[in-house]
Amino acid sequence: MWMSLRTRSRSLMISPCSDSSLKSSGMDIIIKGGQELSVEDFEVTLDLDRKIFGNEIVTNQGMALKRFLKFKEGLIAAYTGNALMGFISFFGVAASVYERAVFEQEYIDDNLDESEVLPLEQGKTNNILILDLAVDESFRHHGISKQLHETLWDYLRQKHNQGYLIERVFCFAITAEGHQSMLFLGARAIWSKDEITLFELGKEVFMAT
Image 1 (tube, one colour):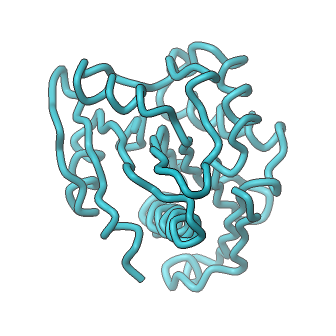
Image 2: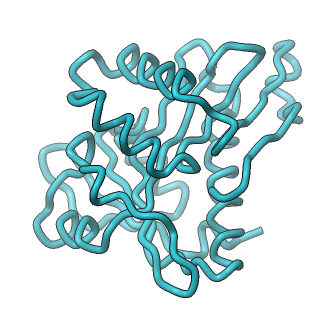
């Protein structure tokens, strides 16, 4: 899923944000990720997912928690004060997940099994599935999505430069907004059917400084 899409060895934190639209609204943004986020923080992101996409979006909360605990660096969240503004989630995944998505045209979402989530390996190629992006309606049009994407690109660029070779980054768009967002980022559409589009992002997206 991805608000438009449905669509860490280090701790991520930026505070405060310099985004002028946020400043003019009297808000500061804090980006947190990795070990800074607790199980309780993760559960709040699920609540936001349900708020935006409906209760049926999380079909297996237990599996979602297992994925989070196995790849904690794969959750990046934006806050103002104690309020969750939005988040982006991603995972290192087995090559077979990418192959199912591309060759079997399977929509990978909440059906991603814990066993298919893999830690990034140094000296080997790694596949990244961006699973989810959600921004609370109250905080849209303030650059939150941009901040979350840029933090993710920073993470991927750092890991790639450390030898955790990022081979593929892919995601699914299920709305027109998500489709346009991916095209704007320079993603390449692999296939589209039933209002779902699989996109792949080249290294130039996250390696650009």
